[in-house]
Length: 306
Image 1 (tube, rainbow, N blue to C red):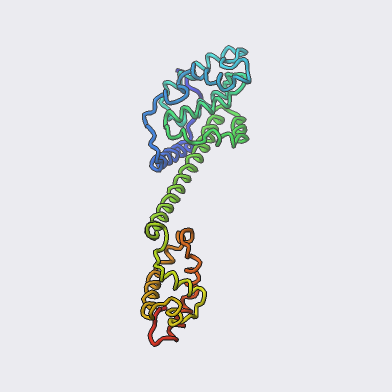
Image 2 (cartoon, one colour):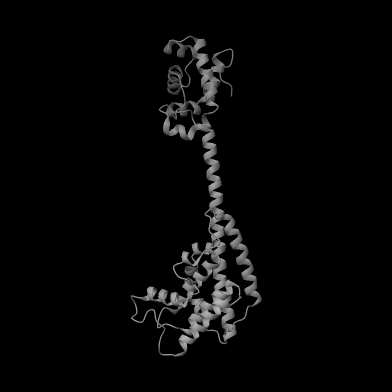
């Protein structure tokens, strides 16, 4: 086995450690259970198969090139280099994060096809990463690298093979780290939103109106509310005469309304859309202190307390 030329820097080791940590957090936050023993059949292509590599390239650029699915023939070394690269990929003990970056780099460097080499290198790396950690299959890794294409090209322009591969590995892994960190951030934010939503729903349930969605009011209570809403200064005697109830009966109705009004603010949101008497009740709430003051002046004992 002939190994590609590369160097694993201290920075690469640091980024790998951070990525591994973030993947662990992501697995904890992910509600959808992802199988850890993902098999090649779960991927569209086997990332360790050279034949699948050619089939994938044909599918990717079939409409753009008549030579899709075949290595370019202008350099007889291409087929040998690709055979050696896949042999290394299938036998290396290198960390999957590093080996996938090296494979990606070598595809761009060898340039085995007339077109689509960068796309194939990046796409095949994502397949290798998904084989290693299936949870990465849901992340927009390719988009993250494509969004930094200018930097991608600058890295590939470095002089010296070792320097170039080192910078390339660091660049790709930073893109991956940023993508995983963003996904973790999104998961945390969604989890917080869901908890807040559940809390609101729980509070709404606790403060919900009785069955039917309307505040339960007797006919006498409804009539008192209507009169009080129309004239906040109406007296007990006037209420008694208008409703043909005794003053004791009016006091009883007012006491019942005062008790129900204690819970009204908590129920207001659902009451707005469900109660036919909302307008009257809102006006009663806005004038309640005025009414209480008036009644205290009109009677020797208080009916409504403030």
